[in-house]
Length: 227
Image 1 (cartoon, one colour):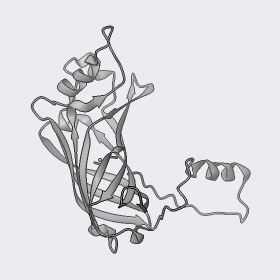
Image 2 (image 1 turned 90 degrees about the vertical axis):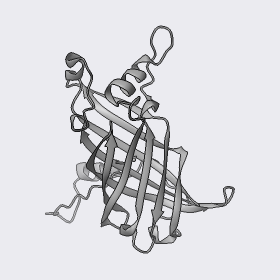
Image 3 (image 1 turned 180 degrees about the vertical axis):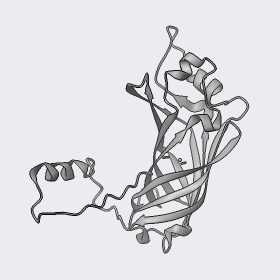
């Protein structure tokens, strides 16, 4: 999720004027979250209880994006995600995460003339090697906090039977006790960029493979429920 499916970047600048220019003020407003948080949501990780949390697959997404023909962005997702988070509220850097994605659950939303998802199957089997290696897995190894609600998660990404390190830029998106579920829920977002060739994730046809960038952006958004 490295389990996207968690975006955190710190921008530090020096102001030469005490008054923010209009353009900069507009840019700052545009950077604010467009979707508001709930009134009862706490953005303080310490407010959430420590312990094991299970990923809520109905409220999680792993989206991947690449550039086609060096031009437009092509985006797709995975539909089957599971995992667990061991959360340490007192020291989030001691937390750990283990997430599994079904490689054959890739979903582009594209159908052939017969209404079949042949393109999805082509990517799953040819590029992701789903038949021989049905699971894509990310296991965290260390976490470095970069702010009160942000951090870098370093872990191992296993794809096509090969394992290589990946770093996720991660943000804590809040938590609260959900009465109807009877559980505490916490949410995260993440982001990473990988080179698919490192895992051998290539199309067999070199012409087709050459039309897509080697760099793939992975975006993750997920809720976890306290066990």
